[in-house]
Amino acid sequence: MSYRIKSGDTLSAIARSHNTTVSALMKANPQIKDANLIYAGKSLNIPGSRDSFEPGPSKGNSGSPSTSGTQGPTSAGPASQGPNGSPFDIAKSHLGKNAGSLKLEKGGVGSDMEDWVPNNVNCANFVSACLEQAGQIKNGQHHNAVVGLQANLDKDPNFKRVSLADAKPGDVVSLKTNGGHHVVMFAGMKDGKPQFIGSNNVNADGSQKITISSMNYPIMSIHQYRG
Image (cartoon, one colour):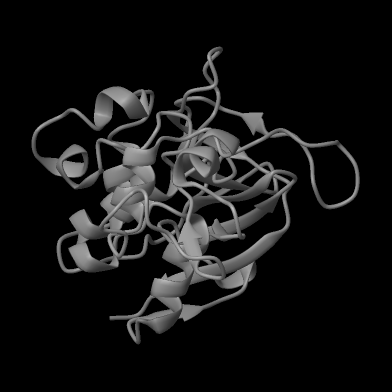
């Protein structure tokens, strides 16, 4: 999510209004060298609560998820592959783990996830790390905001937007939710419904866990690695 700075704004006030911290804002916006010096009209990347999975109404093209926890889909087909393996297989190996704990693991996905990201908004952090581990993106393409990762993949010639009909497990799926955006990876089909794997807000305290679920939110884009 991005925010355009208004006259009279302060970084601390912006952080409070978006449920984040000044430190997190500065890490997400390295162009800011002084927390007390921001300029009206400039845009900020907000690593806040809007990049999370939020249940919606069960009608139309948006609705609450049917979470299948650590159970995988019944049919997946060939997964998208990178130089170091499949991001789908990498993600699946972490099913059931809390995102907050995964970030602290040394090596693997945990080492590529950024620790400062709040535990309720790790969806892009987790997907980025899986893509890095598979060798599909570089560290500099990692992004903790859904639209930021989407933009990075749009600029990468190794990725192409595809339809759901052509999706492979491990393809990056950006969704439009009631509260903003969410990003997961395609995980195959189950009972005729698409399944998605990612860091989802399923814990009682609102924090995220790696799960597979069906989601009825509108799809903004599906990026498939073609490198």
